[in-house]
Length: 274
Length: 215
Image (tube, rainbow over all chains, first blue to last red; front, side, top):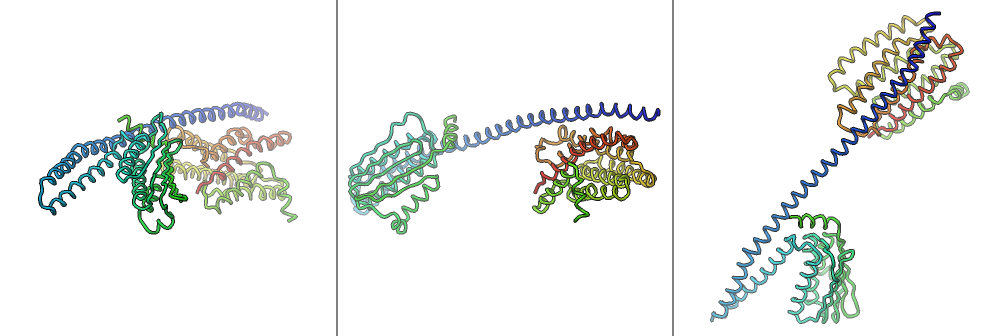
């Protein structure tokens, strides 16, 4: 009988103690685990921020190096080539031999081409120009000079950009080279009498070139014949853009569409910081 | 079919969950996913014992004590195996295994000694389960203070450990004094019902371990 009472006492005691023990363990575990999870999240965010800072630092140093190379190219090579051009121009006037004159004229001509190409490279490399406004300005300058040289009537219309829209150097350079190739083709093959260029940047970068009074071309046939259009397509694909060719009654309409991504802004913000 | 059907009709919630856990483990096994070591085999054995063997023994010999004694040793052995598998890299695990062997020998001796008596070997079961509880608590301790943070949401051993902890700690008074309840007919019915609730947590632990099998 005493043994039975003892058993009952033990059952009652353990029935009280064990649930308390279980609750204490479970509460301890879940509170501690939550605390550890919180610490882990804080540490992960710290690590992520450190990693981002490192990436920004690396990109900044690359950008600084690009800017340094651009500046040195401009200062050293650019001025040297300009001197060659002017000296050649001067020598041409003094030379009597026609053959030598022709060679020197070629030197002056190549020097002018090199200065222009180098200026394009410097423009593409320098992060100061990583914005849509700069791109439109550069295209406009080139188009006006080029079309005037070839006596083609032209109009350039660009929207009034109120705030800075960033665009990476790679995209700028590719868009510029595409426009250059398109204008070159228009002058060489289309026989267009008038060219209209329209540029917008909201929300995507959009440039439309309308060639009037020319013969136009069939883009599918032309792609098979030459490298020019193939290269244009390739360049646009490379930067995630699209180009559309549309043949009109007397001429062509070409549209370029390029999304401006947050990544462009991110890169350019860092450039501004440097 | 007529001889097998009664076994299924007498199933309790614990049995159903164990059976689902087995089906889930089988399904994931064929999908090439793995959970705890040999969980599928363990679930097969416990389902076979719980659904068929224990019932058969009761119908045949009016008592399931003999099977229960073997079954309890088998379960404790599997739990210890799971935790030794988990802690195998730790230096203390090899020393702890000696303790487990000593317990196993003791459990066997006790089983043979009480073979002819209608008595559940609570001491061997409780000693074994206390060893398992030590390993469960060590697992929880490591999760918080030793290991690097990892999500426990999809960790099979976490569910297995939680099921074992809730089952054993809440059912301890019942399991420890099982022999007292067995002789008290009026208390026996209440005892069985309470134990079944504890068993549900245990089965949910098995199910959780089976569900979160990984490739």
